[in-house]
Image (tube, rainbow, N blue to C red):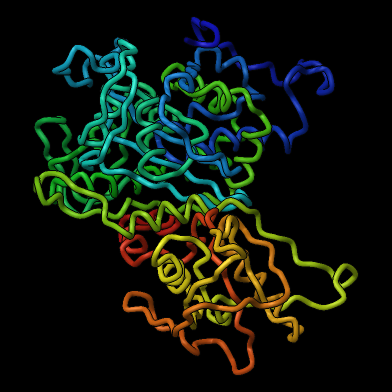
Length: 524
């Protein structure tokens, strides 16, 4: 399904006799060209398998003649989460046996109905913040036992029933559409785009970069991958790099440790792919693009949306300076099989909620000319909250209170709210006392952490069955940060309540998170 066939990469443009810039098709000023170069590379920040193929789309358009596009929207047959305006990209490393360059690496499949002879041991979800200045890359262990929803078989187009299986089996049998649908069903996160890269693309990218240097505490001598590396520093070419990132019989032999090695390797690729040495060398850059272009498949919406790529490019600078966080989904051993893992709850759910609720750009500070009264900058622990259940769901107030307390809010009480006629409250509301000048600021701080966001209203309501709030799981917040005389803001939980924004992640997530800048120093 290539956009157009290309027998070979076109030669580099002559340096001196090109037509004037204003007459060049697809060319802009130097800043925009660099932004578009970074646009492709910034997607590559997520994985070594993508970095090269997604560089300089506009300035070097001809070199992308054999990039594959594949539309899979029609093959996703399950309900999809709402599109929140965030940018979430699924990245999958495929060991398809299609093509001469891949046949020697792909595993022989046991089932003829598998998705065109494809398997994966690399599944990463990249989330870019609304301001496009930070990214979080979530790795999903292939040994994760999950509930896979009904999917179409990618090869036969026949519907497959839901099942309990390893997460990578969604890709093996259902392809990228089933993988997207599985992750959307499990996480509640809308996946906007996808990128697939195969073995040849990975090797070509590494070779085009001149190799990647790694550092090992102990040597490698693995017969299966035929990989031999000494302790200390090694410069890996594409062949050795492929063996390294897929290596299982090293260290404790776990899939989790392999993911950590991949994350370290990816940060090194990003650093080299975004270096000025490569970006300013026209010949090398064209070789770099052409080396991997034929091994990349992506959705047409991503491939052809230049504006989207430019938005992604805004984050590229931060991505190479510590703005990228590599995270492994919280996990624990599967009680039914010690060789498999399951996602740890509620920690994994809180990680996913943090992605789902990271949808609004940072609001600009109001200027003195636009605000008669300066807005009070409040932290959650300074906001005292009474949570009232306006629904017919028993225990809803305490459930929401626990979520608020985990995010640091000073929850002081819970209770119920009875709407007129005894009906359930359709939409959540935030109320504050009319008598305090600063009360609206406290109400805004609370409302901004509730989804959907309620519009604060002056005037408190009568609570029914009010009682003090205590939590056995969240840190104690009573009095912490809130001073005497601060208002108590009421949250009336309605039927539309979705979640509290997660900005404070569990310790298990933070322990398994490393920034790109931390991973650069791999020899210490």
